[in-house]
Length: 127
Image 1 (cartoon, rainbow, N blue to C red):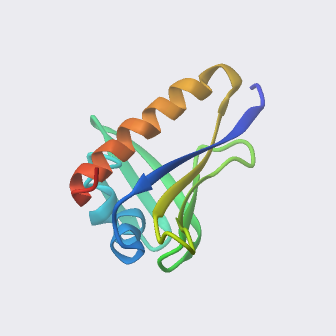
Image 2: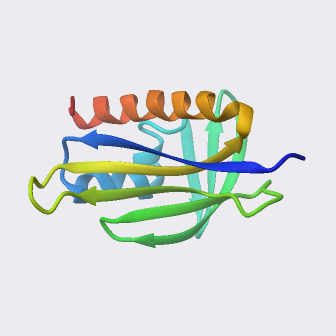
C-alpha cells in the first residue's frame, strides 16, 4: 500500500461556529450533508453511502472548534479533521479540512470535499 499524503482545504462558511459544530459533530448533523445516514455508538460513527457502510472512531473533539475522526479500516496514521476557524478581525467563519489521500487521488479527494461542503452550505443557508 502506498503512502498517503496529507492535504488541507479551507471553505468560508456563513454560519455561527456553534451551529456549524452541530453539523460536524452529531450523527443527525452529519447525515444532513456528509453521508446518506450516520449512526453512532459512543465514539464509533457509522457512515452510510449508497448502502455501503464505513466506520470511523471519533478521536478528539472540542466544542465549537473541531472534530477529528479515524477510519476503522485504516492501516496508517491518517485521519480526517474538520476545524472551525474564526477570523479575529472580520469574524468570518471558515471550515478547515485536513485529510489524507494517495498522491494521485488528492485532486479527486479535494473535489469530493468541495461537493460535500457545498451541500453543507446549502443546509446552513450559507453562500
